[in-house]
Length: 269
Image 1 (tube, helix red, strand yellow):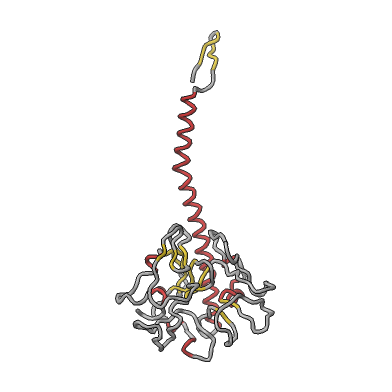
Image 2 (tube, rainbow, N blue to C red):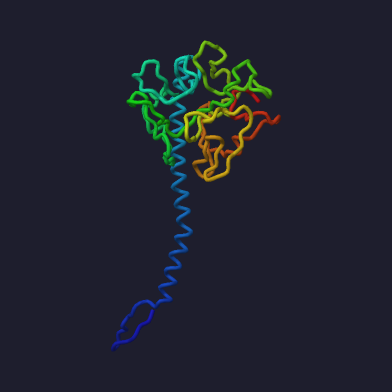
């Protein structure tokens, strides 16, 4: 900074251009260092909030299971004549269909619990309970239920490979083999129940896998419709009720035979 003297007192002048440029460069450098740190801290907070959502969802699922003789909730509910899942109908619709979120909503009593704070909805929308909607809806929220290997009912190896492989969901149909209970699960702490997802309410949107699934590159990466929404991890709820942020690569890891992804079946494979 330049200064000249007027009498015995210095008369201060403005900063020189070089000094201003140095200050600006220091501020820019600090911003470049700190902004990513702040962004990561913010996303960590969102991941924690999402994990807490899944914890509440897990409590709702476990409460439902206890009330229904330890049978797992179905991924969707509809009359037997309906060939596949469609939009959620209002609860007033005769013979309408609804989803697993609607089945456990009375236990969690919050729509917001089904919405991840990091998700930006480009299709569908934040979850809306079927008792509140007035027309068919695809507002499924942010989380998907594990419905992998759905064609491999207990005792029926129709998936090929070394099945049978079964997800932790039931199907309320006349077939007893499609009713899955907690007692059927070989390792509840290692069986995926719910994950961060996009575009649907179950894993995955074009039919659950019958073998292995590759991780799709991008930002964020995808495992079918499970999404690495939080710092390259997928928030995951397991059947025993614990939650954990998991890498898509870890979830997709096959068994020793290369036939199945063990995280997604109730069998000890």
